[in-house]
Length: 286
Image (cartoon, rainbow, N blue to C red; front, side, top):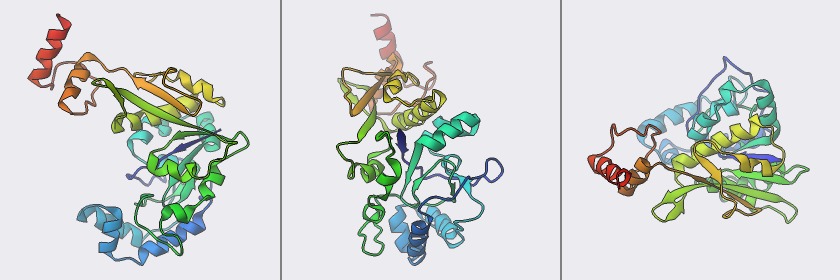
């Protein structure tokens, strides 16, 4: 069984803790991407990165001095996005690192695919960026079926915890023999179940931690996930899609009617608009 996960834009260098085990499997193709990017001007790269001047300057300088072989950080410790914060690999035990090394694969526009302990350096590049290298019109074509073949194993089971931007790298090449399970995290908004980006990222990281801590090999065991207020909805799920719903408290539900994402587990009234406070009191007291 393999788990696929998206990378994060924010990255760090950490050479003081765990050392990388090996280089990424497609490091030669990464070198090609790097050379292509170095051939572009600041303005061209800024357009590719879709960022402001400050971030563009930072990443341009990073690109000029990039070394793919030295001062590397294990991939799972290099990314600092929400999913990785909730995965919290820095406090994993050895057994959990071993499990992740065997089961987790991070999809990357720059590296293609990464094992958790592969050595990486900070970069900025998204899979949907307008990058054409050689005969490839975009990065999806550039990486082609390599990523799928790197993920699929004898079990032919893939647990999809990646975003659509990255999961489509794999989905195009699936065969009838593969069991591909997409995990959906949602919550009630009005009378509809919707996926909220921030909470979904939190849950993806938390689920990776849950799977590693429980040493899961059978996908059915994933249905027991009950963290961050989520629970499995068997009535909405199928063999190819596991749906988890997050139960939100009264205060959060009312606050969300303003169209503002409520990311705060402190359910006190402090900091909540007067309209919400009054509405909560009305509902609580009939």
